Every structure is written in C-alpha cells, then in structure tokens.
Image: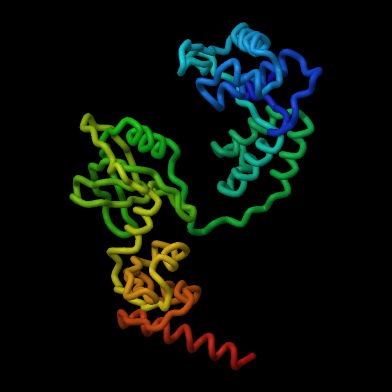
Amino acid sequence: MPAMLGCIPVILLPECGDAVKPDASPTARALLALELVQGSPGITAERIAGKLGVSERAARRYVEILREAGIPIESERGPRGGYRIGRGLRLPPLLFSGTEALGLVMAVLDGHHDAGDPTDSVGSALGKLVRALPEPVAAQAEAVRRSAAPAPDRAAARPDPRTTIALVQARAEGRRVRFGYRSEAGPERIFEVDPWGVVVRHGRWYLLCWSHTSSARRAYRIDRIRDVTALDATFSPPADLDPVATLEEHLAVGWEYQTEVLVEAPADELSRWLPRALGRVEPVDSGTCRLVGTTSSPIWYAEQLAAVPRISRVVGGPELRRAVRALGERLVAAALAG
C-alpha cells in the first residue's frame, strides 16, 4: 500500500533510467505507467508499451488496474488521443524516486530556514513528507534534516503564503487586484494593479505588475502586501514579457544616485553575465560599452564594480566616483600593509 501524505498517496519509484525488471509485478508496472501518464498527458498505449517493454495489450491492462484502484484516467480516440489524468475527487499518487525525495528535502532546507520547526507551515509539510517515505529513504532524509545547519539569509523576506497564492491565482485568471502596501518608510497605501508575475530574487519575493494607481510599471515586495482582493476587471500581460529580466531592469532605475561607467568590452558580451540590477548596457562602439543605472548606495555599487572586468572610466555621478576612489584606496592600503 502507498504511504499517505495528507490525503495524497506517496509512492517511491525506481530511479529514473532504471530498467524495468522482467519479473516486475503488474502493480509495479501499473505505477510506472501512471508516472508516464502524469508526465506526458495524451500518451498512447503504444508509447507506454514501448517505455515499459511490454505489449500494447499489457499496457492497456495496467491502465485498467489503475482505474480499478480509483485513479481517474481518461482516454480519447483519434490522432491526438491518448491517456491523461482526469478530474476527480481523489488525487492521483505523487510518484517520487529516492533521489527526488531527498532532493526535495534539501531544497526546502536551503530555501527555508525554519524547516525544522514543526509549528511552521513548511516544517510541518516537510515532516509529513519524511514520515510518508519508506524507512530507508526516510532515515536518509531525516539525517540530512537534522545535520544540516543552514546559515540564515539576512536579506530574505518570505511573504505570507496566503498572500502569494492570492496573487498567483489572480495572475492565472487574468484579474486585477487591490491590496494595501507599506513601504520601508511611510504609511500604508492602497494600490490597484494588474499582476504580471511573481519573481523570487535573492531571497525576496516581488510582484511585477502594471499599477493603475501610479499609471506605471511597478515591482512590489510581496512581504509588504496586505489584504489582497481580486476585482472583476481583467487584463492580459504583455505577450513578450520576461518577468525576471523586466524585474531586474526595473530595480536598476529610479534610485537616488546616478551611475555611468565605461567598459572596454562589447555590449553583448558584458550583458551576458552582468547583473541587470546594475543598470542598462549601451554600446559605444564595437569594443566599448556604457553601463548606466542608479543606486541608493554608491558604496555598494562600487563594490559590485570591482567584479566588472576592463573598466576604463567611472563617468559619474560624483557620489559613485568618490565611493570608487575610497574603495580603491582601501584596497591599496591593505595590499601595502601586507
């Protein structure tokens, strides 16, 4: 019998790529067939048979075994027909390999530092997953969970999951939302926005959107959003929207201090690895480009520039030039002291 994760059966499968044993039981083959249907909706009996190394008749029999177990598998005839998981009251099993299960535990520990706290929602969910695993894999997962000591990310700011879900659902339904937002310094304000996408960047969650209140593109920290209400008005995001690139470009503008740096490198070469949050890369000629942006901290910006190769000139602004000069003097002094 499969273990239960909440109300979802959790089944441990052989590692991906493992050969199906000739003496595998019909139930084991049926579960592998289920994984194929889950991973490739519309898969045909012929393809299932080919993956499992059995006849098409046997593949259809495995599908019937799954249906008898209460898993709603639908079939459609025709050139585009095949098997897929249908809608039903019972959720299909979650199928994990041992490596996938351990990888999930490690990913949770890496991204959420209260994962060992059973009173935390993520810690509680992780505990359910570990308890649902077969004993050998559960022991490995629990060992990783107990021995891992992740250093907290001081800059991380995780939002309320209910807020995040409300925004993601509104994005999926193409509905405008209204919410309260409190910036780092200032009273709470009410905004109406079209939620274009949710982006996670360096431990912080952002809502990229079009703000009807500000009549401009905006990025809001989700941990500062309160009381999300979906409205009747609908929207469609820009067809060519790249949420990550757009967010990083947005974070590079609108700050207090202007920045401009000349770099002896082609613009396309620098753009491939330079963080977009440092600014916009503009070609000057075939071998030179200009990095233009803004920052709230010239000292931080100067430190980032230390990793940029072949800087030929810091044009401005004056705050950035002073910060770069001070950083250079500190590094020279440290070298001479050694």
